[in-house]
Image 1 (cartoon, rainbow, N blue to C red):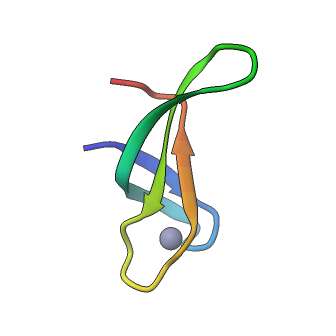
Image 2: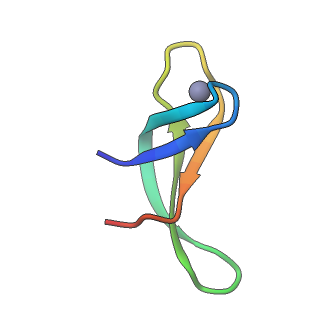
Length: 49
Ligand SMILES: [Zn+2]
């Protein structure tokens, strides 16, 4: 399970459909949607498994 901080829920949430992405500087990160029902916020984390 991938976790990230949701700024809308103001807590750590599970990242739904997390995908590995890279920043412009080449750093890996995971990006997806908040798993809270009804929350459309994009959540990302630099903790890559
Ligand atoms: Zn959320």
